[in-house]
Amino acid sequence: MRPRRAHGGAGTESPLFGEGKSTMTERPEFQFVTAAACRDARVDNCPQVALNVPGVVALRDSKRPDTIVTMTPADWATLTAAIKGGEFDLSA
Image (cartoon, rainbow, N blue to C red; front, side, top):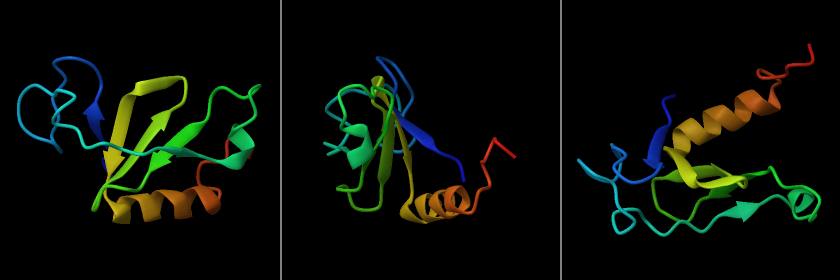
C-alpha cells in the first residue's frame, strides 16, 4: 500500500490528480468526517476521512488539514483491517 499525497502545499507533485504542479482546482472537494470521540473541543489531533470521491479515500490530520494523503478503497480496507488486527499496536 503506497499512499499518495493529493495536496501538501504549493508546487507539490500530485500523482493522483494530474502531473506537474498541484493546485486547489485540481483537487476534488473532499468532505472529511471525524469520529464522534474526536468532536470534543479538548481533542485536537484526530484523523479525518473522506469517502465522497469515487475510487479515492482521503485522510488528513485535524492539526494539519492542508496535507492530504489519498489511497484506493482496497488499500483503505487493508489498512483498517491491519489496524483492527493490532498490527500497529505500539504497546506490545
